[in-house]
Image (cartoon, rainbow, N blue to C red):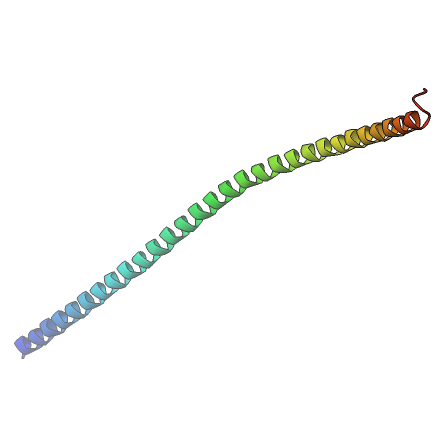
Length: 111
C-alpha cells in the first residue's frame, strides 16, 4: 500500500512538473511575443521621430528661404517704386520739353 501511495505521489509530482513546464513555456512564448511587439512599437516611434526631425529641419530651411525671398521682394518693391518715381519725373520733364518745343515752333523760332 505504501508503494502505491509513493507511485501516486510520484505520478502527481510528474504531472505537476509537466503542467508547470507547459505553463513556463507558454509564459516564455507570450513574453517573447510581447517583447517583439514592444520592439516594433519602439522602432516605429523612432522612425516617426526621425521623420518629424527631418520635417522640422526641412521646414526651418524653407522658412529661411521664405524670409530671404520676402526680404528680396520688399527690396524689389522699393526699387520698383523708385523706378516709377524716376519714370514719372522723366515723363514730366519730357512733357515740359514738348510744351516748350511746341511753343517755340508756334512762335516762329523765337525764344
